[in-house]
Length: 374
Image (cartoon, rainbow, N blue to C red; front, side):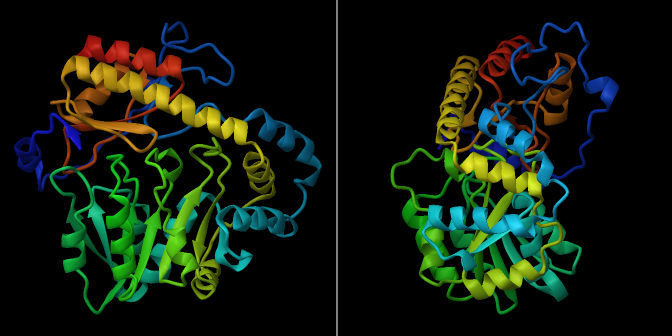
């Protein structure tokens, strides 16, 4: 539920769209003497990057050790290393190994599905705004995308999405938790929606941020895959496991669907990614620490936004979406000038800003800077 959410303000922005520019190096980079530069283990020099939903605490020490020890294996093709990680993921989710498709991050899985189901004019239904990787890739192969606006609470409008269903609908895409809003559908609504639509078409549940959901017993749609339904679930090790730069993710689907998706994968995974992924999955301490730090950062952001009386949405991800009252590109520049990079625009919500959680000290500096800027 949006805090102090002004529906009329949002509705006035409906239908707006626009391009956005990416800050160039000279404009975005902070001075080497900038007081905003964080000095701590694994902290990058330069501007604080709270713009792309990364986990700056990773890779974990165990992953680093595994990669160092595994350098002698880098001359090998990855085929011989797939089995171990596939078996680990199958065991983690309680499915046979033929349900798992390893990908180069969940991004490859999304694009593979976009190609598979968007080819030759296939129609895809998705919310708007949401994470567009699957839909944008599908468009390149002739897909038609039905974009359905979020409801007044910035949650998937599942009733409106279901009304767009027709005989040429090849896929329904649901990002849950949603990016950029951080919202989730209630457990019962999500399950019922996916069950009902999977009887008529294929449902793709993007669960990139599933690890951050704190609601007890919230179900993954992998449970529907186990029932043999027309459901595909994507997961990634980029977020809570801190492996965004290493590129390892996976899809979970019924064997016949998994095989079809596997045939359209382009990059697949590398030996370093498989070594890192295996070590990350064997490191529950780092995983728990990541979730704890994320929660700390969210609380810092909430407190700051409450003080500033800026409307925001409680997040089920590693970012917060809030109404700045300004054009996002104006706010971007103001923050970049202070050495902090924040999220891009998500039309039509051009006054709403997405800010990722970083290290605790980075988020504290973000909070201080936001107070100054506002």
